[in-house]
Amino acid sequence: MKVIDRIKTFAFLVWRSQALKYAVVIVAGVLIVGFLDENSLWNHLKNRQRIEELAEEKARYHAAFQRDQAKIRELDRNPKAIEKIARERYFMKADDEDIFVIKESYDDVDDSQTPKPDVSDETAE
Image (cartoon, rainbow, N blue to C red):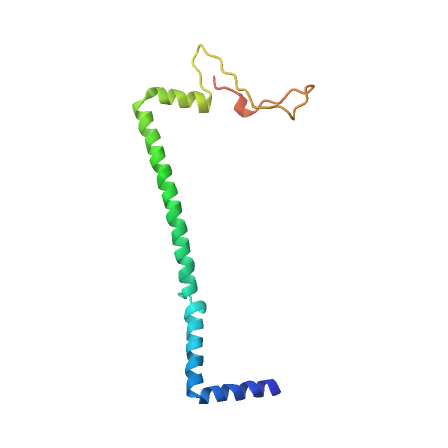
């Protein structure tokens, strides 16, 4: 009870003093505007940082878009480019060709066991 009485007494003294009254109101206002409100200064700063991150992401996507557009224009102009992509990515071949896919290493495979073929090892016929 003594603590509550001391708090009441302090609050009463603060409220009676003109300078402290204004100081309490200003501090409370700064706390509300700065941190507690949904439109607070803190949220404003976080939103600015997010906007900068999104602008950087937009620039990366725009660069990727321009690069892809250049590839599409190249494919439209050059039929050899389509053939190159078909051979490299999809392992397509001409009728008189054979394709061998060589993996980089089989270090983890025993010589006594035959490796299981992967889907990527098969060629489209």
